[in-house]
Image 1 (cartoon, one colour):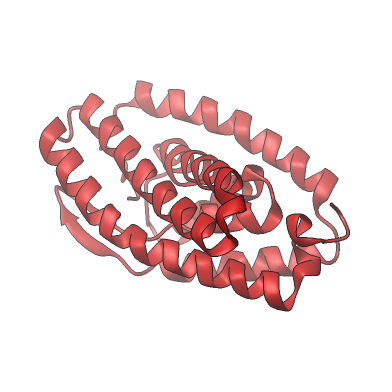
Image 2: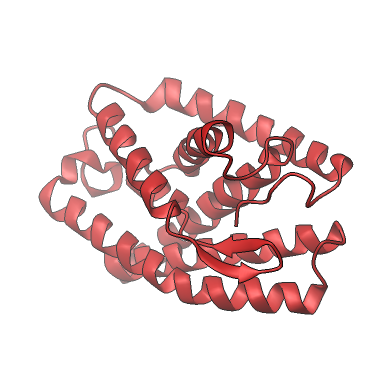
Length: 210
């Protein structure tokens, strides 16, 4: 799902950079007000885990690939979509600057898709379904976050003239709908384990910061 440089025009990249910078600023403000010595190590561990799972890529064709994202899980654990935005921004910066995974000019679009869209869709889906059970809410939130961000990415590439609409939506949607099942399952397992073993780390499960 990482868009390489040259796949979308400069004007489109600029729009997504502006949007992403606004959300990154809000995410930094959230971190200043909510992160403490207990949450920072967990944040770092999640960052390393998300970096690792994103390294598992499935070629889709048309120059792109499919993979898990992880923004929804981070948002659920830290009870804010801005956690997912900040964490994915850091991960994407490292990937783009040091591993040539995703372009620099288009990084704003990648942050928008995998950070902003994925985090907000996943978090609010989880929040709306939490009364149905943590596992169900986490699974659906994880799956929908990945599927939605893939569809948004496909639409961006269609606007850019890189993908034909139907072929792009079909390829990105189908592959990420399947990959999303794995993301949803991992999200549900991790959330369930933390809620059971360390509920003090989760605001909504009785953490001290609630």
